[in-house]
Image 1 (spheres, rainbow, N blue to C red):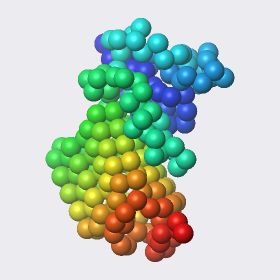
Image 2: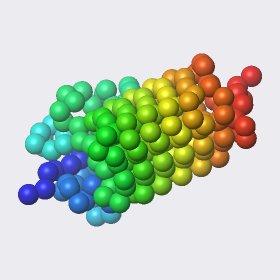
Image 3: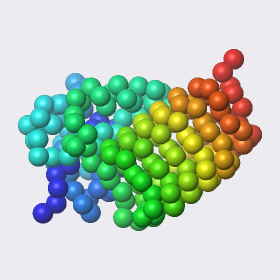
Image 4: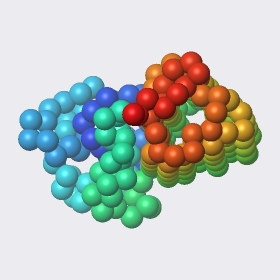
Length: 208
């Protein structure tokens, strides 16, 4: 029998998670507090109010808030669910490739075509979108979102609560400070030593 799963919130990340999870979970609903979304459906799955989580305490939860405009608040949004870590699922699409020598945290989603290689550490509450590659000995901090088609070379440290835009590349051996946003299509070749918004080729700080 498949395990039950609730997806939070009713948004794009959760919609994309459906195909990732169906091989392992029975998805019983979305949860979102927004009044306009009550009773809405996507992919044949109904959205409910937050008490749906408490009323189905045998179900796991995958909490996936996060966009370039909200990534800095992911920790607060997820904490507002007031769930023990044991309630959170980890979902890995069957077409992804995750090394048996990698470490994957809880409430983490790895989408189709992603590759996580040897000794990589993926934290808790992380989202990795399709076709991104996390190379050896790299650490991705908690609450970080990795866009699609991102390449992160070996021995990189990405801090907590970062947002790495789709199509970006990060050179080997550098660190990205917690709270940093890397713009889409950027080429990061230098360390980012403080919370920043960086973009371009090569990536530069764009906050004045």
